[in-house]
Every structure is written in C-alpha cells, then in structure tokens.
Image (tube, rainbow over all chains, first blue to last red; front, side, top):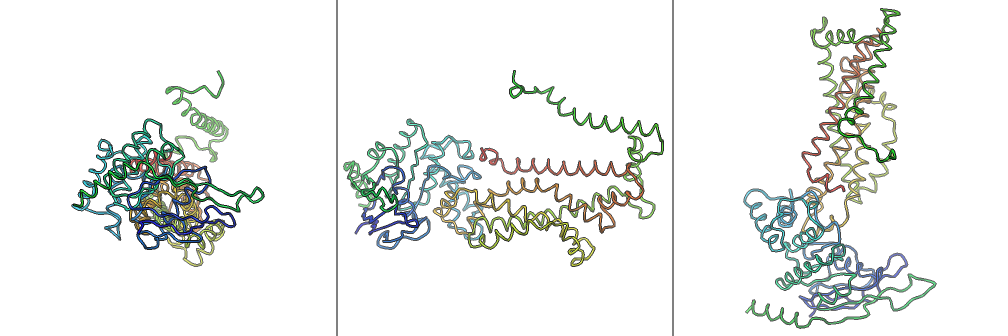
Length: 254
Length: 271
C-alpha cells in the first residue's frame, strides 16, 4: 500500500479550476520535487497536503487514513519566508516544538524539562550548522541561516512528511548548493517523505527521487479558468540514491 | 548642495533642537515683561518670578484648609486615575484585539462593533457616565477606558492580522493548540505593538482625564487648573500645564525605553 495516495483531487476557487483530476501514489521515503510554470497549482497542491486547504473534490489518504483537514505535527513545513518566529532566539525557535505538545495550558516547559528540550534542540542545531548562533534572534541571521533554522525547527517534530515551498528561492546560488547538501543529508538520515516545490528545474532534477511536472494541458482562450493543471510528467530520478537509502534503512532495522 | 542632502552634525543638531524652545520662551518672557511694565497688576502673562512663587506655594507649602501639598496631591490622584484607566484599557484592548484579529469566529461580530464604538465621541457620553457611575473615581476612570479601549483594540486587531499566516501555520505544525498559539506566538509579538499603541493614545488619555476632572472632581491636576481659572491665576495654570506636559513626555519616553529593553528582537524584526 502506498504511503500517500491522492485520488481524483480537484481544487476550485469559485468557478476557477486550479487542479483537475489529480491521481498520485507516493511511497514512504520518496523525495518528490514539484515543478511547473507559476500559477499552475504546485503550491496549491502543497497546501492541500499540509491541510491548509481542503480539496473541493476527491481525497488524500496518508497511510490509508484521510488527511487531517488542518495543519498538525505529522507534517512539517518550510516556507520561502516567515518560517521562523522573530521573537524567539534560535534555540527557543527549535525548542518550541518540544514545548508546545507537552504543555497544553502554558505552552512552555520549566526547569529540568526545559533544559532537556533546549539540549535536544541544541544537538539538532549543531547538526544543521547553527551551533554558533544559539542565542541570536532570527533577524540577526542571514537568509540561508534562517532557512537552516526553519528546517531544524520542522525536523525536531520528527514529522513523517516534510513540505517545502520554494525554501531556497530567495538564496544565493552558492548558499543554495550548501543547503541542497544539508537537505539530502538529513533526508538520508531520517525516513522522511519530502515534497518540495521549486522554480528551479535543475534543483528539481538534482534533489528529487521523483519529479512531478504540473501543467495545464487544455486551454480555453475565452475562459482561462475553465481548465486546471494536472501532473503531466512523473519522472523517477536518482534511483541509485533511493536504493542506497533503502539498503541503509534495512541495515538499521536488521 | 540641495537642501534634501544637507544634514546637521551633532553640535548643530543640538542647537537646532534647542532653538524653537528658546524662541518660544524668549517670545513669552518678552511679552510678559512688556505687559508687566505697562501694568504691574497684569495677570495674563506672569513673570518667571511670579510663577516660581506660585509653584513654591503649591508644591512646598501645605494648604491651609487640608494641610496637603497641593501640587503633589493633585499629581498623585491624577496619575492614579490615568494609570488605572490606561491599565484596564490596555488589557481590554489586547484581549479584544487578539480575539477579533486571530479568531475569525470572534472577529466577525467584534470587528464591526469596535469600528462603530470607536466613533462614539467619549465626551458626549460623559453625562451618561456621571449618571450611571456617579461622580466618584469610577466615572473618571471609565471615561478614559471608554475613550481609548476601542482605539487600542482596533490597532491591535490590525497588528494581529499582519502576523504572517505562515507563522500561524508553522506553529500548528509544531503542535500548538489555538490557546498555546495565542500564548506563545501571537501575544509576545503583539506586546511591543501594545506599548507603541499606548504611547499613541497617551494624549487622548490625558485629554479625557482632565475633562473628567474639570467637570466633577475635588482634586487632580485638571481640577486645579479649572478651579484657579476663576481667579485668572495664570501663574498657577502655566506651571501646571508645563508639569502635565513633562509628565506626559516622561511616560512616553519610559514606554519607548521599556519597548526597547523588554523586546530587543522587535527593532530588527520590523525592517
């Protein structure tokens, strides 16, 4: 059985069709990159997976169960901007994810529990290369560092699905390359299923194990909103990388 | 060089800051001196000596009737009313602003209501406050609360809506409930905005305070000004106005300092 299955999903705003008849089945641990022209529903699809929007028709199943219709801790997300909390230090931005689920009334931990949460956060932050900036505020970090923080913040929750909406779109090419390395490393370590929207075709080809191309195949010049986008190409990529990962996880479980 | 590109250096900036104040003082004391030479009993523009005497009388000599030092007693009761009024308004404004800015189900009924309520001229309902709450402290504090709460609530509602939706979604993916999301994400981001909003309504708060004191009170800075008006005692009124201005400026300055001290992240996050 597939991990995520998308069954005949349509998304309409008023009478404008954005996505039509989407069918997709994704195995756990897949790294899907979503590419296509702007305005053809990649980000809409990501919002559906996130639970920020509910499909107009059709259903999305996660592990055989319908997807929760609001964002929750099973799906992590990194946006292009505004992914981190400006009023918390780098350390607390990540520790927050450990505090919120454990304290329903105050949303914060105290004493030993707090120290442990911060320690755990600090370990992860060292791994993404932010060990030197634990007590800084996000605005004191560069764009690349902020995105590293956003990724660490999402990963501390150990989500099963990680959704990335053009996470490196605002970064310089050199820094973007570092981020690709980091992301692949983290993906190989965890059993994450990743969906990443990108404008950058080469990024899509380099990172993914599966490239999904969104495009409108039908056009009505008199009614631009009449037809929506579909997945026109579904290309398996970097199969060696995926196989290596499956071997590694088999070794770990053995 | 074009005017737009000319900037004062440190020394000349200080000069330029002092200059308008010095001009104002100079104009006043010139006028005062001219009038007093023509008529030594003139009360309209008292001299510095006359005003100093009046301040000494109000601040350093106990009142014959009550035994109180009037300036300090007036200041204490006015500041108390102002602080209670501002405190209640800030708390109410924050709660209403968050409720209607973050929770769509609360915003739908609250937001139009606040808009309409903020249009009611508070001074027009002052008689109603006196009728309902009597002439005591409560009606004066209520005037401040009614006058500035809708303004604060509307401003904070707007600020709450400006928090990027990405942050609210991110918090939910980190396991926040509605309550903890408000507590750990919305509230801390709105607190510096609240302090700024309070600074902006300080002027209105003083206005309502002095209006209420002028009409029904037995002490307070506004009461005193309107009381001595009967004797044309400009030598008391002018120092009182200066004192009120100084207090208001100090409150504004300390709120600004508090914002910077308590929320060091805020300046950077705005740019």
